[in-house]
Image 1 (tube, rainbow, N blue to C red):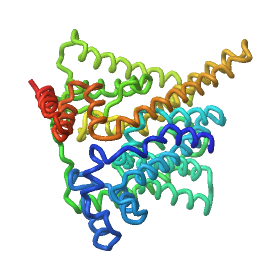
Image 2: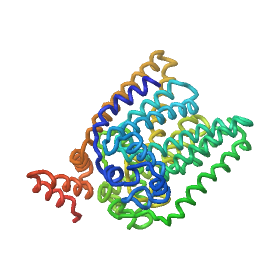
Image 3: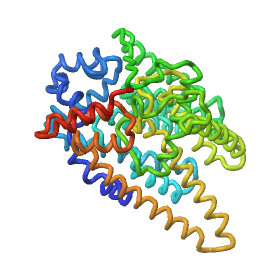
Amino acid sequence: MLALWALVLAAYSNSFEAGLVFDNAKVISRDARIRAVTPRNVRLILTEGYSSTTSGLYRPLTTFSYLLNYSVFGNGTHPAGYHWVNLAVHGVNVLLVYLLGLLVFGAPAPAFAVAALWGVHPLLTESVTNIVGRADLLAAFGVLAGLLCYVRSASAAGRNKLLWLAAMLAAQAIGLFSKENAAILPGIMLLYDLTWRERAPWRGRAMAYAALVLPFIAFFYLRGTLQMHIPAPFADNPLLGAGFWTTRLTAIKVIGKYPWIFVWPARLSADYSYNAVPSFGWHPTEWEDAKALIALAGCLGAALLAAGWYRTRKPLFFLLAFFFVALLPTSNLAILIGSIMAERFVYLPSIGLAGCAIAAIYALGRQVSRKRPFAMRTAWIAVGLLCLACAGRTYARNSDWLDERSLWSSAVNVVPGSAKAHYNLGTTLSQLPGRLPDAIAEYEDGTPN
């Protein structure tokens, strides 16, 4: 684990130079509640929304963590301290992924490989390098820690069982009060139980499911007293104004994009709002609509593969299903949210993608090694090179978050159709001497036809 943490630290070693860009300036610099530890500020954090710019969200533990940085650690608006906390939480999550890998594979080598590949993958930079990505880090911690505590509680008895259940409830509360998608924990627990029914009797598991009602009641009660509603800007999620089938087919196209950028993370963006992902237009001959149909076929194929692996290759079944279950809250399939797509949405689901990749390499290596003894060693060398390549790409991606100009220049290059990326780059350029013509050009490029 020390070697793995050293690799993660090396990949993110230049992230401490990133400034308060994008939403970070709004959440950190303009939130007066985090500037001092006072009873009034604590009360305001518990009884108000996440920030002045996102009043429909209730994430008090995430805000408390900013209070810890700003006031207790004395970081103020200096970003380095916030980056250190983000990296520390990510390091804890890497350890939890390793422990989850031990449960899934029953062997340390593939568990270590999954944790290494996931821990340094560049798709996670929006959650780790971006300071406000801490909400995703804490939510993932709640789900991973909650699942591991649940597994231990199912096989424990007496006082130990109660202690593990209490730890599970604490983990669920941490995740849920940090970001809403941590509500997926019961679904992940059910997936684990359906995959490995023989590991514990159902009677011993029922108490855990019943106990999880408590943090949910507390969350919805506190949030309900605020009479909050999540703002739904069309510019951030154009699906809000689309028809039922157009919305679902476009959402499926977005789901198909995530595995692709996981496999080839050469082009990453901080923004995918209007019109970065064109809505499905019922023109199957056009490439954008064909992408949706290809993604739909891919999802159906994944479901068939998972069904075939249920009895013969349980790790692959669990990890593939993990990706889809963990992605469900932000997929825009069941409910519409404030964004159509974001790389931070796959911080937790990408564990399933990393696990599938390692499981496939591990299974292939074991099969070939029966005839070629060095095949397994070759497979692990390939995994090591893959991790180093991902770490290098993560290091390069961190530089995009250095300031507003580098961030939005990168976004415009990756998603030239995004109106928001052009607007933000134009706003940044307008504040630089002699760049007003370039700023006007960006505004014009981002204006919808």
